[in-house]
Length: 124
Image (cartoon, rainbow, N blue to C red):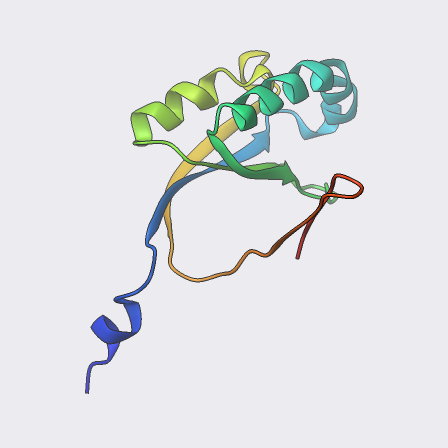
């Protein structure tokens, strides 16, 4: 018996694009990234505030590894995702190259707690 349609019929099927960042020169990463980090973070915060970034963050750099970070973009299509990725200061400076993947979120949960008394926000 195929339960697949029944199992997925309520799923949100959220279309997203995953931007994987890879270091172009891992051996020089620390110096290059420190130099451009401020500009990159300002760019990232602007993308977040514009509603284009769903989640983003760096990976722990491991020896001989070039995988630097991941950003999940909430945009209409791959053309828009590519256009945004090209404006990343790390990409423009040639510190990282990126790969885009279309991803559809079917499962997961988010919980948000907002405390009015101290203006705190917590995700669990």
